[in-house]
Image (cartoon, rainbow, N blue to C red; front, top):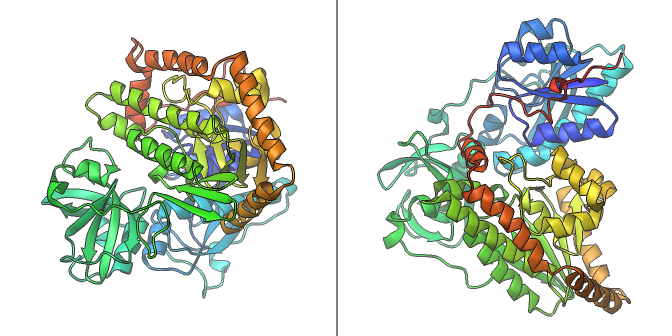
Length: 572
C-alpha cells in the first residue's frame, strides 16, 4: 500500500514504524505536520491508501480524516485521552500501560480502536519507556492495524466498548504545578517518579542556588545521604547530588529558565561556578558500585570476557566523555580477557559528538574540532586493538558518528528493534569522520556506502545485517539480549580457533595499513570537517542551532517526502 506518515517530527517511533512497514513492502512517504494546508497538499500529491500518525501534537484536519482512514498512535491504554498519557502513567505509578491505535475523528483520542497492546511498566525515565516498551507495543499494534486494513472487512470497536474495569480516562495536559517537587516533604521515590515523568520534555521546574531551572535525568543514590533536603551535597562528572528527606538523587541535566534560548546541558556544566565549594564524589574504579549510584562508565568481567558500559545521556559524547571512555577502554585492554564487549547504554549506544555542548561553547567551531578529534582517537584505539576480539553490542539506538564508532569493533551485534542512522548529511551536510571512509566501504562496498550516505534513512537491525553493516541481529527483549551477548562472547573467548582468529585480525590490520595508512583516512575526513566547522558555508552551524534549540520544522526533507520529488508520480 501507499502509506503516508504524518508526524510532528521523524522521531524514534516514527523511524521504527517507517522501517518496519517498508520491510513489509509498503510504499512510504513522510510529511511533517506543519500546517493544515501542507498536510492537505501532501495527501493530494501522494494519494495514500492509509495515513498513520505516530507522533502528533495537534489534531488531524477534518478535511483529511473525513476522506481518508487516519490511524493515530496514542501512548496510552484504550480509553485514555490527553497529551500527557505517559507522563501521568509514570507519575501515578501505573503498573500496566499500553498503546492504542485508533481512527481519527472529531473527538481527540476518542475514535474507534483498530488495535491495542499493553505492557508492564518499568520504573524508568519517560524517554527510556518510549524507546523500549512504547515503541515495541506501538510497532505490534500498528502492524496488526495495517494488516486488518489491508484485509478489509474489519470494523474498529468504539472506545466505550472496552471493559470499564481496565479502560482509561480523559486526563488534562500535565502542568508544572502537577510536577512540582516539595524537597521538604517528598521522598526519593516520589521525586524520581516526577523526574522520570518529565524526562526528555518538559523537565521539572525548580530552583538551584537561587536560579530558576528545569531538572532532567534523575537517578537514585543509596550511600551518600548527608545534607538538608533540597541541598546540593556533591557532584560527579556531569551530575549533581541533591539530598532528600530519606536519601538523595542525582540530577544529570539542567536548563536555565530565565534565558529563552537556554539549552539542556550537563548539570555540572550549567552550575560550574556554584559547584566550586561543593565536594566532588569521584568513584574509585570502573567497577560497579555496591549500591545504586550514578555511574556513566563501568566495567564488569566474566571469565575471559570484559564488558565496558558507557551510558551517556541521549547517546551524546562530549570531548571529556570521549577522553574518559578512551582511558577506560585502554584500562580494560590491560585486563586478562580475550573478548572485550562495548555495551554502550540501555537506550543509546552512541550518537556521536555532543551538539548541545558544542553549541554552548565560547567557540562552537573550536569545540567541534576538539570533540571530533577526541572521538576519532577513541575510534582509532578500538580499530588498532591487537590483543582482544572486540564486540559492539547495541542495546539501544545508534546514530551518525556513533554508528561508525561501533563499526570500529571487530563484530557488531544489535538488538532487534534498534535503529541506526549511519549518516551525517542531515546535520547541515556534515561530512563526518570516525574513520567511516575506511570502515563503511569495507563492509557494504563503495556503492552501498554511497547509497547509505545519500539516502539518509533509518536502518533497522535486520536491514543492517542484510546490508552487511551489522554482523548479527539478536533478540528484541532487552534482558534476553544481554544474556545472549554474554553467552556468545563467552563462546567466542573459549573457541578452539581463538588464537587463529586473533592472528587473522592482526594480519588484516597490517595489510590494510600497507594498502592505505589509517592516518590518511583520518586526515582526508578532517580536511572536509574543517571546512564544515571553519569554512564559508555555515550550514552545519545553522543546522546544529536549530537541532539543539528544537526549532519547529518549517519543511519536510525531500528524502523523506518523496511525494514532493520533482517528476514523482503515483503508479496507476
